[in-house]
Image (cartoon, rainbow, N blue to C red; front, side, top):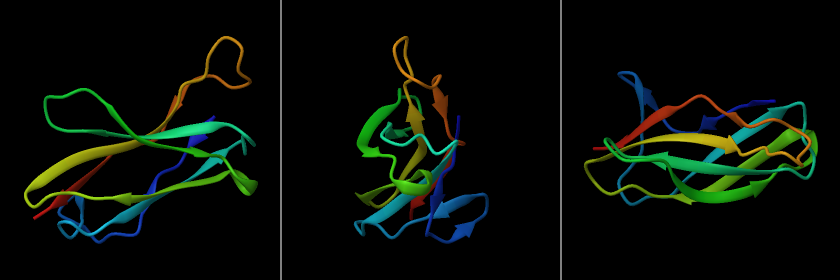
Length: 104
């Protein structure tokens, strides 16, 4: 499957810019729709491994979202959606594109 990732944040100089301490949401859409599947929003700080921020069920039309992502001032993270797949699951593992979000 293909997982999409979008943010309602301004895009400047190759990355998204979030206000420090203000929550924002990450959205996405899956193709095929993957009804009932659970996708995970993951973050990664420089030099670290991926960390799960939250899970979201894929709703009608393949849509999913996670609210309440916050960054501290001066923080930069990479975000992606991930579907783990597995031997007894209907779809193979998949990751969305990765985007960088900074809070100046």
